[in-house]
Length: 422
Ligand code: SAH
Ligand code: F3S
Image (cartoon, rainbow, N blue to C red; front, side, top):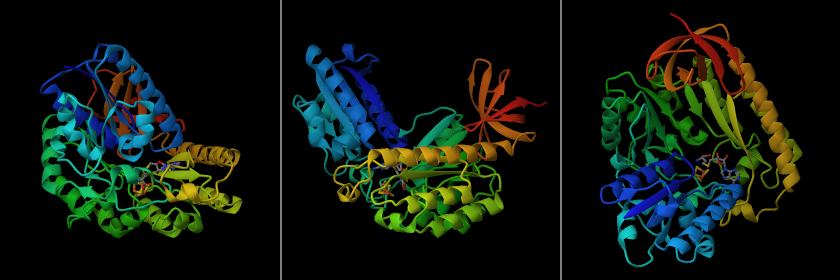
């Protein structure tokens, strides 16, 4: 059978797509053009309203192709799980498969009837979901322990299910042996890792770091409440040079009342404590945070408080998203702010955070830093410094996969510019 597959969304979804792709390749052929396929798979995301609209449009297009050439359309991923009716409205004959059951893709592909598999859990193996290369992304857990009032991901990906330390170690070891230099550990909340199986992230990291080799680990996003529980242990582990001095701690709002409405289980002060502990040890360390602008009932003062927290804690990068009401979430039932206010607040936050990003990047100009080269595009190389900053190096030779010494000569909001030093 010829199978076409396309994928949207986060690292967890990428991992699910890899798993499906590997399973399909054991028995079928993968093609790059939906018009030449006997079956079409789309692995969906639905985190925000704009994503939803884009995906639905694409499902309609693929359904149109399928109708013309015959065969099956399979809609996988978060939208299939959280909004099956919406998907079936766009493609009435589609088969559905939830993120928990992607390992059943062959049965769904090969079945003569339409399949709806969106409840319960299938058996997912981590090995099959990890793709090799210089950078390797490894999901360490599925789902989360939160219940944030704006979040549809929870509905799609469910409660926390951590992979065992042994399984993760096995995958990391294999990746390193096959030449990986950057290991990205991801999850909806990496700080919650292990809480369902009697262990924690700090223990996992200590175990992984026993694996010898010249790799470096990027720890994915951590909710502040869970990060705070292990912060001292973590800061000790960060001393290892094989951990990027990088933290992704989504704050979402700088106002305690809004955090309560969001059902986030920390205060602004908890977030500040984490930032302070990290930055007092690693002043140049990189902090990414996420903010939702214009959450229901957010007053102008609450919004200003968010801006003040950003100015005070100076995150190196802020992912700002305009609040978007999601079906089946509690926040969607609260009184909503007009679109114009949500957009205006989003713009203000982007402006402030871009200024801070540039300011923080400027601090590096003139320094000489080690950087790991992860990509070479013609004359330009892209490398990551020990604090995860991206540096673009001009006019270089065969340096892919190597750690090089770079003199930082310039700074932009999103990256640094550098040249190789002997
Ligand atoms: N587990 C993560 C969030 C995953 S969703 C956490 O603990 O925060 C990724 C990002 O999308 C979130 O950080 C949030 O900023 C944004 N997001 C999620 N739902 C949203 C919504 N309904 N409207 C706007 N942004 C949203
Ligand atoms: Fe969503 Fe909150 Fe979990 S943002 S993925 S419910 S930690």
